[in-house]
Image (tube, rainbow, N blue to C red):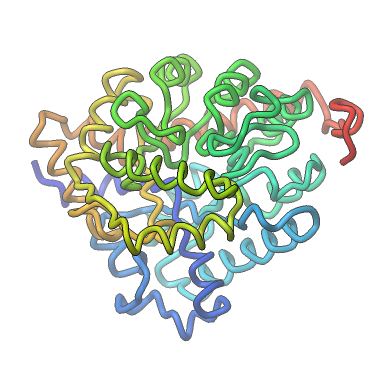
Length: 391
């Protein structure tokens, strides 16, 4: 199979990349100091390696950590949005802004890669539907309902459940996202939150960077019943490469770490405290190694359970320190596609994996939004009214 030709006509749309937070932490968004146009960066991501990887579009995560709350989280998210714009302007010869499926394909017609945005964590909207709408106006095209900690209206996969999934306000968030045309991202949320969101959703959902729980038992992965429901919903699970989500030994080692931290009164959702504990823990407990073959196994399982029309890729590059052997940076997508081709995936299968499924979901979300906006106006719901708690 000629993968070069396949990727030329069906380039990779990756669901999640944390380069912007790395740029913030390392150089304060100064792309003269972190010149991702050169291919000589300390990050997993730069434009030459994206080209080598057959990439055509990237959802840049406008992530901010859960330790930022309230207006501080909103402000930092806006700074991340600004950074995505700056990145795209700085490398306008290679990148172009996109907020729709048509604009992604227009970028390809011009020989450029598309820059898109997704906000990773409902804390970024500070329980405000007005803030949600304004992030959409700025170009954010998905919202991950939680990050590692619960929001007041949704349970995270890595926090202690409080809402039992989604509160009444959380359900209204999903409905309003459908109305405005923002994709509902169910990575990071608890299984009960996944199920609740799928019950409410009027448009296809996505998992921007999650793998299969039946293959690797991690709360960050998607159970089979949810994969089946995602297929019925028309959504897509974008398989991630994070070692502790794709390799059993890595998942077991992470569970041991989490248990040890909890014994010291530190939860995984505790952010800075957990990160400090993890750094100390790893000095005496080296990480096991994941490989490209682990990711292949997850792709095969998601395809088997959800179907070939409901799978994509979300590497989480620059969101983790270590990647599987064979998938060390964004240049390595062809190696994964070659391994899948060796296992019998056709060119059509691979084209669905790289971009066609995601483009279909984007267009469906856009279509549902146009219909819903004809039938209902902006939701004015407030969390204090629906959930009876302070905003």
